Length: 545
Image (cartoon, rainbow, N blue to C red; front, side, top):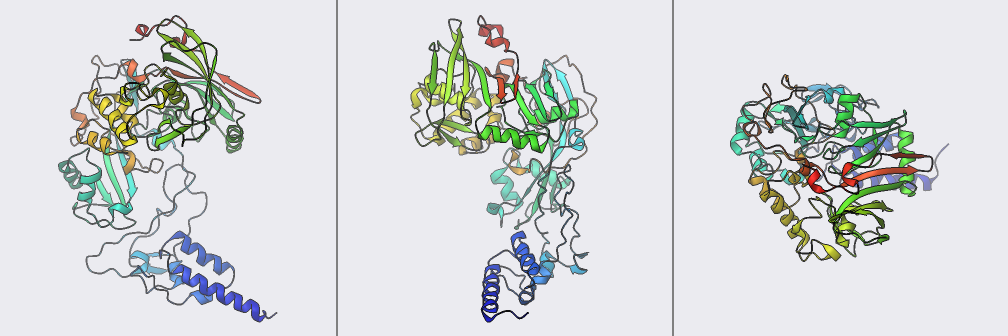
């Protein structure tokens, strides 16, 4: 059956519009290949086989058919290794796709001295941590703390837009200043820095778009409280744990193995969990995970519908008013990277119900019912009311000014506030600097003085990192006579500056904030923990060493 003239005219306009649109897409972009496949499935691919020259590309000798020769990986790739689906594609001069020789980027013949840059690889959305990751290193316990044996780890990243045209040396100088240039030069000689999986010979190499960088480091993690991670419920659909203070929920910053996710995997054989909610690193209490995707969706819907009731307890400074007190001040995020917030009229609506449970003459135990779920909601509202949580290193800080943020009075810009917080904790050589990411000039300044984490997570893809086999450790369960953060025998690295330091262990006071998730309740379930000892009516701060 012959198409009508009107239909043929419409098809012609569609093809012309599509050709114009394709000119402004990157030649190797997934979206461009998707458009080509879309028109192929509609049986109108033929008009696209002429040569299209990309306005910003030197690859104008490709036809659209040649640009679509990259083979698709089968669905359901390895969900545990963190590899991308095209990690095993043939490299330059190898056969790929439909038997064509890939001589360079997109099939272009490389000029003399030109460096091949492979196309970006597709992310695998189903990445989860597996036994391979859990086996990277081991724990040892000392002085009531859980410690991680130092291990080798690959930080990986694709070249960021601001790095294009700069040398590796310039990037290390400007953005990874925790280590000296001499360190990076030595690491280069030992093959620890790789570009597109090839060892870098010279840091003067200029970065190009899609370059994939890998930096192998000797990684040290901060210690956490050595209390066991108690599993409260595990019924095949929901896993509920009683999280000790000081342990992050998932890998972040300098923490990887000293996290709830890794402890569950290493000590309980539990993996492939779905996060329902999170608790701050210093917060203890009920933590829920879904075991199945169906349960994860169900719990997420309960959260969105506000059918999940949450109850916390905390100990605050001063005598909290009796009776029920409701705070509805809006909360604004000051920094998304570190989650720093404050009360501000431009913020999102919030509502928290407070009720005093006891007062010991100095501090009060308060019941908290957050009816919304904003970042640091309880902590920010208590600060606004003038009763910050006892031992809150952020919202109880004097960096907020003489009133410490009471009534929303700060008197400084957000950048000045962040800088003041960093300076306060740096002057005290506080472990709480770990809660600040590279988000301001103040934090970058802290890096210069070696008081900031030795390697920022900005050079990593947290769930797409690979393992370098760790050294042999004989320290699991050891109890050293001396207290201090130092590398166990057999785990030292001659290039690692951290191995040369002996840091004092954090005190228990540095690892605990007096905020505890006591109960989570839904329409047909309720999970709760016991009250912590600091929530007892007659408790005094001197009881905690």
